[in-house]
Length: 277
Image (cartoon, rainbow, N blue to C red):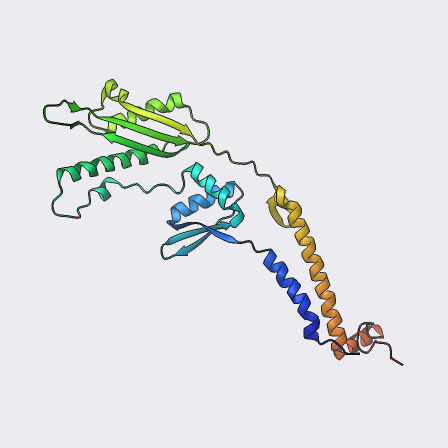
């Protein structure tokens, strides 16, 4: 009878263990790249509320966020509803930074309108529950010689989540925008500020958490984790029995240890095998 070598005996067990290890590792997908630390931390905090685990990885271009490939759609929807990552806004210092010696009046006017809009958008986002804001500013301008000057006006879009008292917030937004744009002071100026408010349509699912042994997981994943832990325990038991069998079969010192402690070698050892006629 040909005896199997230890390598050939342990190879199937190692293959099973490797497959189990690989099965526990999900595929990761890039969610966002080139983020700064503040935006990355804000996204990680948001996704954790929805039970989505995001990992940060620093790169030369910035921070890269990865999530499980199965969560990419849900994570993207949650970020869009929360207005993340936030649009980069230029302040007055950045817009009016001198890149050339001479600027035309048109360039100066365009930069001023852009800077004014960006400043107002940044300020409006400081209101509670406001996740995004856009402001379009029209400054006094004469369309053609002899024509009357077009008065100032502004159009504002505010996106919010949760519950917002629009009757209270709308007058405050109009007052803030009108006070920041030349030519819109007074009651007549506030009337020329158009404000549109829209609520985020994404509703976060209710996530229930439970404990499975030392692990805290979502309630929907508790059974799968329990079965996985049970399978891994059984696998470890089978591997342990296989290792003992292999050691007892091919290691004479183990049989001698059993004989010295129990009076006879184990039944699966070479010394304990029945003699063949």
